Image 1: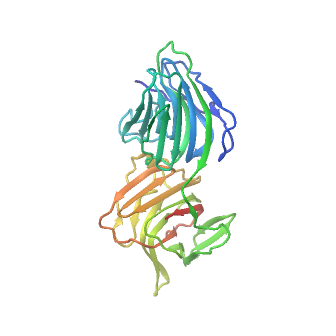
Image 2: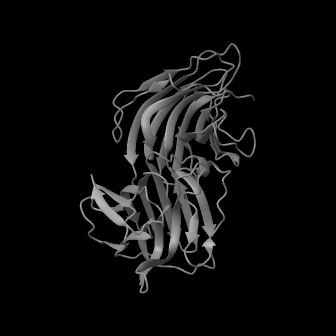
Image 3: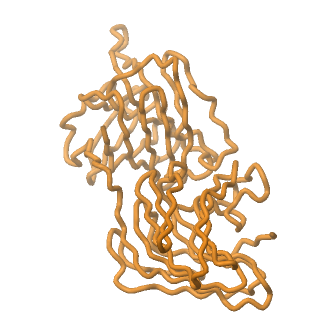
Length: 371
């Protein structure tokens, strides 16, 4: 099936302020010819966890919802059709087919999978969709499926109708209910937004608190600098939002220990760095072990995760360490899952890094951890 990239600028549907339940249902009707794809951004902002009831009525064509989805025209997928049926869109799709079945699709540009199918003669299709962390549940009548949600933790919502029969009527997709659940796990703040209680500064770089954010800038030495938690962790899930203020090299370290070299007061860190790099495509989210093995996996630049970073805007990074397995996400897109049977560091603090020469600085906020 040939697909077309629909323009989105004129098609945007605002449901409600974020972190609320939608009071009224929202109905979308496709406007492009039935032989072309039609996509409309649902103006709810980036969504993490949510519950939704959606009704899909599209005789003669396939239609539904893209969720935790990412639009990127720069990324070139491994295969020409490794998108969600519309060029440039990646993430998850919940689609009702002309035969009445409902399908769940996932693609990250490297592979495309139909993870689940719910069959029914019911038309229009009414589906309950729940996305909570890595757990997704799709329910239709008495049937339900639980496809994995580990590849995408957040993203945008879109209405979509794929190309169908030329005489097919306009597709109708209606969000009957919607509830934003934010992040439901027992996330605990690492930073109180007011002072550095529970943190320690290392090196001569400058760390300040401004408007509830941690701001790191190079000091007079333009050397290496860290601000690190006093508490240590073994297994965990940590996340934070960052905005790079210009050129430099930054990171979110874990399992780290910092010492001061006596001859020059230089802070030496033993730890694993979740890379934060102001490049596009970017190595952000890949793992570097300081003063030991270096890159645990050499960062590729031909993955979707390398293209989701917005160098001049706010971004998110998330790292999970569970035994020998470490998984990272950038802006909700899984960047790396690494099984490390030879791991050398198993416990330590979290540390925010200013690399030598990182003169333009970085801002951090929304730092949370789950043990």
